Length: 406
Length: 230
Image 1 (tube, chains in turn purple, orange):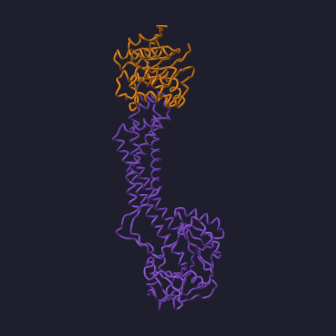
Image 2 (image 1 turned 30 degrees about the horizontal axis):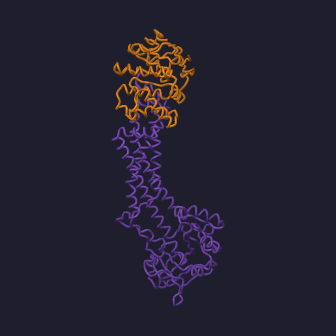
Image 3 (image 1 turned 180 degrees about the vertical axis):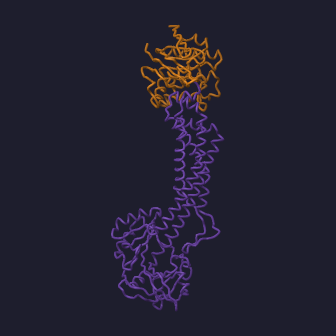
């Protein structure tokens, strides 16, 4: 305890200087935490938007369907997959899907379209499809009184084909067996907006899509949500181990380009933040060096009474890390309410950003152990490193010279 | 009596060319356990240099320093630090207490370096404060003690680690005459009660009079080595 007492009292010797140094470290910590909170919060928000819009946290496909989709690359053993997903404690929701490109007719207009067969009950447990309905009502898998099944179409397709709710849409595509698939559907809803990823999508009830595409009970994809969204890669690995004949991919692989962009952006931001902390710690280094120079004689005395050079390095290390710890605690107390507010309430953006039909109008922070502890660890490690040059300088002091006599 | 200090042809030169000063010129002395030895001589005679070389605070240009048989001229770094910590007690002219530590803590610190358990440290601190007559003043910082009291704390600090020898560089130089003599009496008592070896430098005749042995240096050379009470 004596060494800690000595360290504390040494810190308090030049109280004003220590307070100013501490404030600069506290400010650096607050800035670091705040920036990471906003960075992680914003990216987390964006990731939530697109994973809950379409991708899910993990997807299961046959072979390389995700990269080279073909109508015949279907998952046939649905029952085994679904039993596995139902029984997996880390899976909070899953939904099967079938896809195919098609030609869509509305009146005398035509357009390419993307058929998306979805399970009307399970899909909303994975995505925000219901919330994206901008006109009409979310469909069911029953035919109407005239025997037509319902479809929901993207805003882009509705605009291009000049279609509205309750209009008919004709789809033509190729079945998996080589047959021509064509049918008439009644539009029950229009989803998203003209910028949505599914703006040219046609949502059909899964069973209807399966029959239309002649794929029997097969599906092209399972999208699922992980209970812990940050742990989705481990979940994908776990599932892959028990589904060796299928390809299980986390969203980071499905949206690899986006993921790389996000990581690059984060790294750029981390670098900037690291630079800010480094600049803060140059000031700290100066303070600690000054403190060592002022105490040259004392270090000479300590060495002469038998203090090992390494003990002096330890003393300077403890002093610097203690000052950093106290500063970080002050910074923590001040920054926690701010990031809690940003996480719970957030800052309203003047210009809302539409991301695939989901409006991103609030900049939110992230309040997590990572946001608090990562900057803390980084700053403490930097403080520890910064303490070494002054510590080594103290360790090299020669008692005879330090005490200024011969 | 066991030989605790032996210097062999100890030489130390500072500077070069026109500023070259021979601080010690092949000094050979032997000090036995329990001696109370004064190193005397005018300013610049080499007293402090001799004490620093004996204490391992400086390295000789040539010659050897053997403390209890160990040649400290061949030690360096942590080994020399440990040797100083365990075998040598230092008392400096300007006390050199750690200003942010109380008297007790100054005494305790060296035992902390030795790895003495806290309970034993506290007990030893009380014992040391009693020996130097500072009971009740242990919680005071150096700035709240007189010069004489600070030097007593320095004596207690030097004694705390139970060293083989205590080296004191002009321990009374910053004290008034009465306080200086009182401090020397404390050192003398400790020397006699505990058979502790003291080697101290001084140019004060009143202090010299209380030593068992005088080693007189001039221009780095031993001019006189005289036992007085033995």
